[in-house]
Image (cartoon, rainbow, N blue to C red; front, side, top):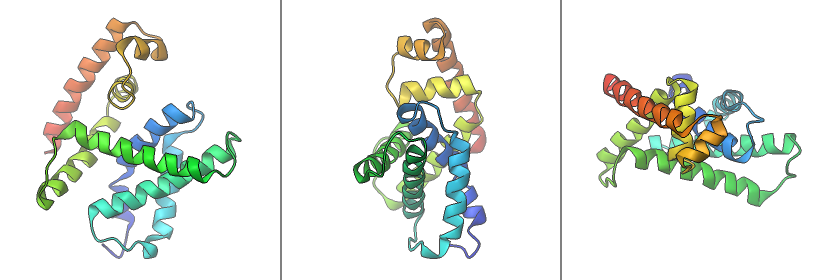
Length: 185
């Protein structure tokens, strides 16, 4: 990896913000801001760069997810919702890994060669960037449906919108996502 980690880490800001937003939305009831957690995590990763021993993009993203999980666990403790609980911290790490896997699965079927895995990883980062540029309501509806598996009615209740409005958000969001991803390729 590079001597100056700044650009390498910055590349993952939207990816990590998406993962944090998914976890905050489901586990913490929106009491935390994903951008704040990601900023804190990137600063921590920058300071700990000399401790990173990986050589691949996959190892870097796993390391960043682990730091994010620790920051989420700290935030939960700070809010007073849970004391130091190793099981909770491990469950956050597992949840982040699951969210990352869902993001990858959304893009492509199983690919096995190293070059295909690297390409898929790059696509995951582009997808996170594209999701970050969507309007908030579209992004939230897509996350609730694709990551949390919620129905149109559940999303509508959560967002205080009709199922027809939610369906429109999903349709427009997916259409815009396709356009953004094509532009970034």
